[in-house]
Image (cartoon, rainbow over all chains, first blue to last red; front, side, top):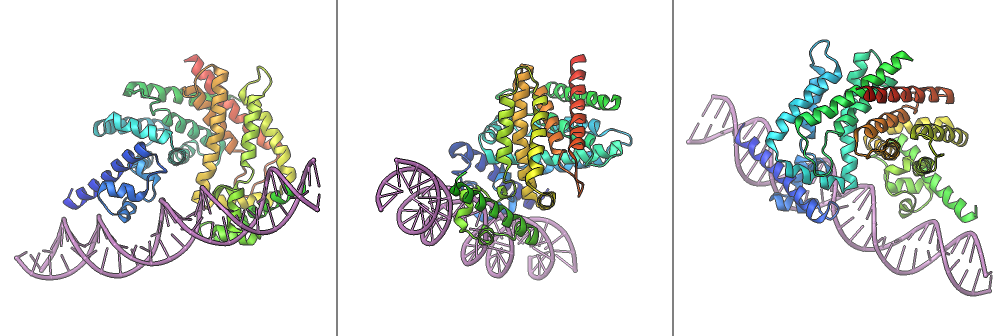
Length: 199
Length: 199
DNA sequence: TGCAATCTTGCGTTGAATGCAACTATGGTG
DNA sequence: CACCATAGTTGCATTCAACGCAAGATTGCA
């Protein structure tokens, strides 16, 4: 990676760090883009060359998560079910994540989000985008349309399971614990499908 | 209802109508609050005394739906499950809705929403609020916390089922058809719970 | 008729977000 | 090493959503 890209990444994360700090100090609404840019040492205009909106600076790597899941679902081994691919993807993501970022920072991020309606809404929006990916993939598995009921139900459940992998309060989840939760959700989901087939 | 309230309601729905028309003519982004207010025959400032934001004018009666569900869940008969109360509420809502508003207008509203990312996001936000209600109520049923897995999964499924009651494309659903969809979702959900109990 | 509550309106302010053009730094090429 | 294309940064100007406030208009009630 060249100097140029490295500098850009540096600015990008400086903005994210500055934003997180300011949001947690003064609150989201009391912080302006100008404040964030100033603390990050760049011009206000530069903010928008890295993040398209004020909310997104709190979710710097969600675009990456989204695209990796998109690829993981599209390029999964022949015959592998969406839900298995999802599980595999989650494991690999958790593997990468815990290495690069320390837990305290993530916890602070969660606290700020939890206390800010606009950010909560945006987080749900992101989750909904994941749900769409899952829904389309599941629909293909089942040979149905994304508008049909079964893909909807399955995707909603899977998205809720993904959401439930985020620790609550100050708990720190370990990988096996997270997977256990996911598998419980998958069991729920498969039980539901079975019930539909019986009826 | 006095003259004052009637006038206010009149202004409120004039704004909603004007907004829907303009959004479908020029698009959401190309329409300003001033445009809407002008067509509705009121001042721009008045818009915000009826709707807190530009998005909400497209969902004029969701606050009502929300509060009625909140009450329906809180004041359900002793021993009645959340999901049954939800079903009852849906039936009563559909009964009221189809009488007051014609289907064509609703269809136009759905088209505009479907073609406008901001509005889609807001619709999901509203659905998420319903999901929270359901989640808390289900958690109480099960004697668990709203953060626990089962209430999350059940609420997510139920919310998806609610969402699936909205017609797709230009289809017009009849009441029995909608209920059949909901019941299918409830069967899915109970099958899932059963699977969890077995494991 | 007059008073109180409520709705409407205009004015001003803040701040998010975008477009554009100029400037700067980097990476690669001859 | 000089040159050029590419990409990142910045300042400037603009639009518009959203809010606070105070004054004006209208309705309900005594």
